[in-house]
Image (cartoon, rainbow, N blue to C red; front, side, top):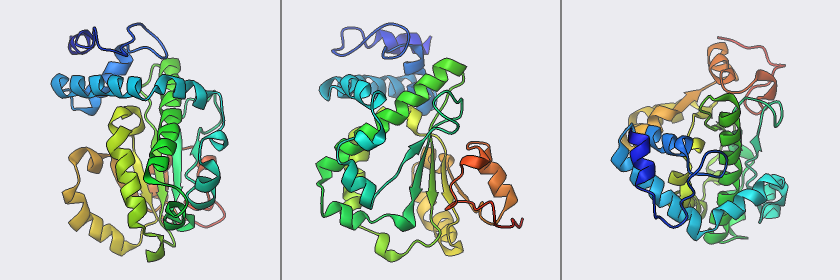
Length: 258
């Protein structure tokens, strides 16, 4: 009933595309917002309508066609982002796989300050839109194929992270992207695994950072150490096949210790 009411509230809204299937605003589209807003139809409906309007305003349906027909290497600003801030999205075992897409954020090799010397905040927002739409589109395709609600996974490698990797300019760009469109992609807000963080960082997260973040962010975030713990590796392999886990997260040649 809640989903029907949410969809009915969109009738007459510019950009609303009633129907069933990929590219339409159907029950699956509404369900993602309802679940991401803790089954609160009022907030979920408002977020869904805002998303439909945002997609119309930025012609995101055309963007979807572009990203589905191209490689990530063809996205705008790829040259700069690949060189200084490459966060690739993988589909384990290929396009026909039923595994969720995952984004790899290998923090020690990223150079956000160098990136922001070459692009603007608005540039980064556009690049983020392309990556977000690509990931969301594949989540939806897998969901419709398997009838299992699929959400993307993010994996952050922190081993070897240093202060030089911090950048206030990039933090502002990431914040602008989040404000612009992160809430428009509930299918991209699956698990976030922070891997191999120094012990001190975990203490800071548990005592100072975590309590300040929204509950839904904390619920989706898991700090694990698959490089040294079989138990943590098992947690990660529930979401990513072990052969697809990058060596910056877990090196299979290294003996595991629980």
